[in-house]
Amino acid sequence: MNLILLGPPGAGKGTQAERLVEEYGLVQLSTGEMLRQEIKAGSEIGNEAKKLMDAGQLVPDDMIIGLISSRMDGEELAKGIILDGFPRTTAQAEALDAMLSEKGQVMDHVIQIDVDEDAIVERICGRFSCAECGAGYHDTFLKPAEEGVCDKCGNTELVRRTDDNEETVRSRLVAYRLQTAPILPYYEKNGSLTTVDGNRPMEEVLDEIKGVIAAG
Ligand code: AP5
Image (cartoon, rainbow, N blue to C red; front, side, top):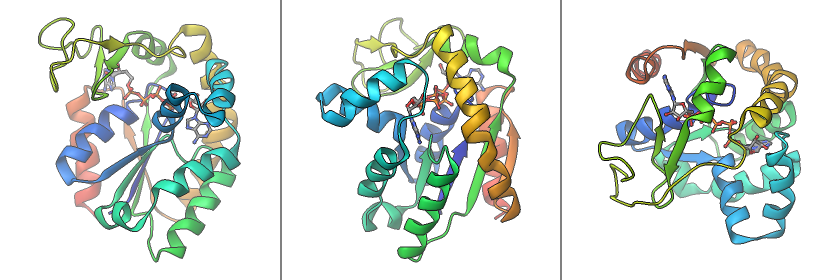
């Protein structure tokens, strides 16, 4: 099974992807995470991407398509993939279709997590994650059991993203509205799109996504 999680920044794509990986043994491919690893490694791609990410703008399509295609090998597709943060433009959606069809695969579900913009800033500004295993947390909605310690791996280095501030979130929302939301009709037309209400607690959102998957 292959699926895409779509939605504005802070909708809960990463949060739900983490749970769906546990539930179905899929491989999560997050383009945001791949870019952050490039930045950490100090690569040319990372240096170019950082300026755009910190400004809340999308990085160029060719860079993203190159990154994702290098990760869509036979082994990952054999397990099934969850795309989190990709595609974000029409060009990326078309490139994805071409990559899948070349490998004899299809996209089974495109799930849009819909969240009110008012909630997004609060979600993003309170977010942090484990520097070691990447597990995600929130100051209010998802605190670790022991303050300052990752529940999953016990690491004590918990970090915040440099683009998680109100000003950048507003720019990311504009990019979502102008460049990403226009791809929704593309998936609506081919019948793969389902919208779930992401304004509810995480477990309820997860149950609804599992229901969509179970319905085939
Ligand atoms: P990316 O890393 O993909 O960021 P994003 O799309 O802005 O999404 P987020 O990671 O901010 O949000 P999320 O939906 O995963 O929310 P989360 O689950 O963490 O991209 C970053 C940048 O990289 C982009 O701006 C762009 O520059 C570049 N980029 C990446 N991909 C690209 C592409 N394909 N093309 C071009 N450029 C690209 O949840 C947020 C918080 O809310 C968490 O703390 C969580 O605990 C909490 N939360 C989650 N669900 C709930 C709930 N139901 N109730 C209460 N709290 C909740």
